[in-house]
Image (cartoon, rainbow over the protein chains, first blue to last red):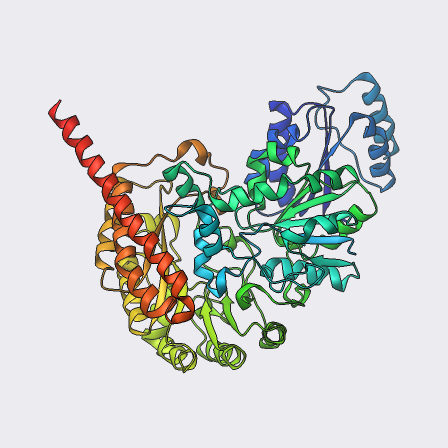
Length: 112
Length: 504
């Protein structure tokens, strides 16, 4: 859908990631996005990501949110699917990305 | 056998003996009575068919059931006592609740005062701890939880993980539930959490009518509210009034399944058909004529005090509605109203439009006048007020205490509730923030004495009159007597405490 946007977070939700999400949530409303998919790729304890972004979820009252929790091994699959759907991928922060993931993302970003 | 089941625990899957207000007892623990008797009073078992499908179910669950039936799913709303046999075959279990973990008022207050877990949370916990659910999960059952208390799961992640709930849905689910259930049935990945934003809220034509009876014949006539109070989440949704045709379809369903009394549900019944805060008298009259042509007895879920005053002052609308409602079958009706505060300052800050079309400065007098109108027209309100609101001062609380004193002549129940952040306040850390102060205790005491003063009159002459209700009436009076004795004992203790503190 044209008004849908995906945020992909790999690994732990650091303060920096949290700030980026908050910042971008505010921006997307003004840019006309009304539906957000939050995808967390982590092998941490279940729902840890949800606990970490609870403030973000509770501060939202406008946009629709779907929060997904995936194992890290699903990352390339899901990213490839998103790329196939023609979604533009923008890297907001690469602080926690392993070289392998960086390569994967580079390939996908290059496709655009 | 059914692929998709809807259910909830006993405190929700009950019609409270046809007396909705008794359901409030499910928000507390058993007090002064053994728990089985307490549960019998507030949550008697629901009648079912041979398959365990309930006679009446919570209205919101009936809506979701209707969406899924329309989409062609093999779905049933079953009683918790009949759940186990269906879990052997079902693939998806949908849950709903008004207060899963007793975090809403007044459950949270009962819990903090009595230090005992309220029966609603206890009953839900027992449901989820069942071995049959654990075994079904191992076989691949997907659990999706929703309803008005869905937000509570965000504060109870241990339960979410422990019970292995797959998805929590917060918001009106009509437009998204079909997709979720399809994914669950096809074993596709489900989101862990879904929030239904403004653009996914169903339009009026996307809301189906119910296909089976709702608890106590409740029928929704409006969704949303135009008043924009800062503590409320309902106000964030767009305003939608059901057409009379939709309402009639639901009335017919209830009556055809043997439910002949009912509740008109809206955040503000007197604003039915209005796009502002000004009542539309013709719409309100037509609504009541329609509902009363199907139901013998009716009540309102909610009305605002300013709409009550405005409707009577400008249109004599409350009196006209009384002429429609009161007949040989009923001589009063009940409603829940929000006083929230007796302080003009606080009213201006948190609910400036609640008094509209009157100014916020007039709020305390609006409350008094609306109570007088209700008293004169045999409307019995269960009023709530909120303590511990953000920015509340000692003076604000004392203004509320004074207002309660001025409401003494009017037949009503007044229930104080501690603030739970919803709407614009919902991110606030209320677990650690709520501190009960002396002035809060004073308001709670005044509410208690107001309520027990009128409760005896209401129970004997209105709510539970007649020989059918004699055992219930007796038990409620017994509870009231115990509660009075208990509060006086606590007061004496507090007084002794004060003297000791003063002397030393």
